[in-house]
Length: 389
Image (cartoon, rainbow, N blue to C red; front, side, top):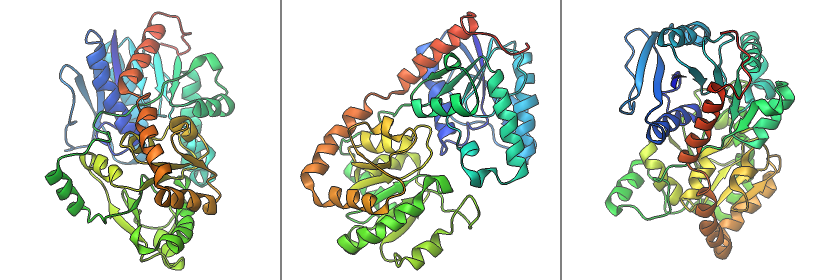
């Protein structure tokens, strides 16, 4: 079997699609060394070659034009053409960007339908056209993978794809995310790097509207009143450059709420530093309204950090009984959960034990094994071929 994978997000490991693509390829290579894997990598003029490609995995470079049009042309023309030249027996697009026509049986991973379901992301005509294009292409794929039962329900409802054509394959968490104490000198260096306080509550993720960080800030007005400056909220991840329909004006919200002394931006966090950041937090809060899976709360649980999440989408599936699932529209309840985790040592200790046990159910090895099973079923003809090859 020769699998060609769309590697558009390969060099974007800070994104969920980038992490998924890298982990899937690495674990498929270990699990099934007889399967030929080739990354179809789009490269801008004078752009860097892909980094971190596992030994034995091939790379085919396809020239990429700048901008959104360049991305669409790569997905719809460049990737299928490369699959044809390779003679691939299977094509896999590991994000919601499949081609309308594929020269090989096609598998697409639709992590979620956020761009379809959140009104703020549908306002531009270009976004609506792109959503229509990839939705039609997904309907023509041989099989759809998705990250959770919640996402599968959305796909069945909004894309009209049959139940038997969609398989849930959960994502995983790596062994570096664990509750064990690290090297004290390394930990000290990381704490100094981000100027971490002794105690803090953590958010780490994106800042698009659907991530619902605004409700977390409203919740923190109550937390700050109860706990004061000793337990600041740390906002980790790239800070938006400005306000837009997709990105609220966070600085204005923080100022108007009087949270300047209680909220700290620490910026982008290197992947290697995330485990310590999670382990040092009194609680990790992830209030997202739409999530296909939710890697950050899983990583936090694996590190033994109590988590509070929004009770929508996939997040209750991921945390199970090992955390608090709160209405994303209820800042008072969110604040109550945070305060309880800080003040109630026994409850926090219970969740610190339960989190790693829950997280242990989600491994990248399992993700690769179940994905490989779908590949084999498609190639063997057990799953209906819908594309014109």
